[in-house]
Length: 192
Image (cartoon, rainbow, N blue to C red; front, side):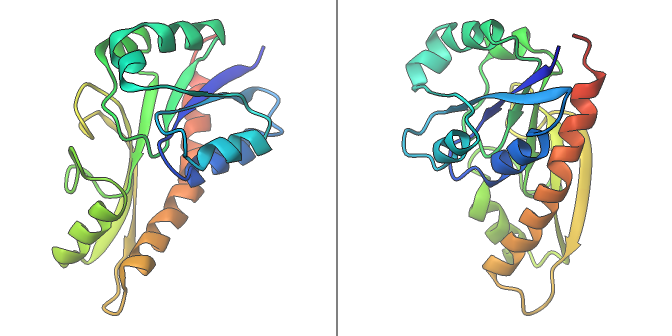
């Protein structure tokens, strides 16, 4: 029986796509569901092209009901992977999936984390601080933004002439390289 991943994303979903590609032919693991809080998110088209079902939800459904948990349980989801998902995970979901929700952040935490620190906001903050390096952090999710236990970190050099697009590109290269591999290593340890 395959282990099953649910991906939560709020936007374009490039990391979600890398995960879908990575597990497409995997005999032990599959991406079973994509969930989003944004009905216009491009990740929905990516999921559709891989024939992966999706679910769009609003704040009420996410924070005030158990609908999402029921959906995840009905689909026998083993691991929740956040890929550019911008909302804080509610307590009921954390309790239902302890140690089984992971996130990727586009900086070396604990620096440049917290509420409002996502995407270009992170890259701009790193550049404005004249950091010599940028990076990524893959971590477990807890009740606070970007404060869960670290799983993996990787760095890249920021060169003098690098603009925002270059810094973003270097970060995404690391995300796309490492996230699928780390997700696979984590899900393999989960007992079915």
